[in-house]
Image (cartoon, rainbow, N blue to C red; front, side):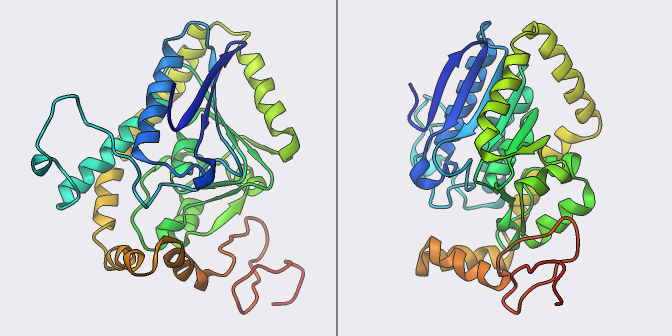
Length: 303
């Protein structure tokens, strides 16, 4: 049915699985387009009370696919390639960012609730998906962060602010450091953290309970909360996120990083960028004592 995701319905729920496990479910525009289509399909299906969004393989998602991936036609109308937008101008970049954002906003805008089931890495664009879901259940040993904030652009999903608060949003975005699933739940990124072995049962059990409730009632309650978020500026900040991220892409570091990818390849460029940050981790509770190489040590050890 789809090329980049899996879709199934059963017992009052739709399960949507990001299905590029060999790429750690890195998000292409094509995958996001399919995700949007599947979400609206689930919203239109009266048998579905809720959606579970998860990732195949070792993790939820490593983020956006910086190597590109297959394109998606804007419409069935054929426009000469030389007349189509690319990324040449800042407005082109903002337009492209808004295009991807519209696909992802289906998670927020659809009437039925969505549960994010997070295991393994949930990085960058993966967090953009998770934070637009209605509830996030995460494995204790998962990893959550946005390392692209170190050099590549500006926070493209302000929902961090509403879930985590301004100080920890800044702490993680300004450094690109990551936290564990347990810490992500402590911060409010996730509703709760559970052992990995119990993650699926926890999410399915929650979906069982949602299946007992009239979908129209579920929709009314979801939309009441989301309208409250909109009154607090959530949708306006989403709109502005594309503007600020487009601006961030003009930074010298972002331009240099993209050039570096061309010179040494994506994986090597990422290793080079992240090496000075050691293990790239933050600690939510207690002091951040580190080795000379930047790795966190036991908080009870002397620095």
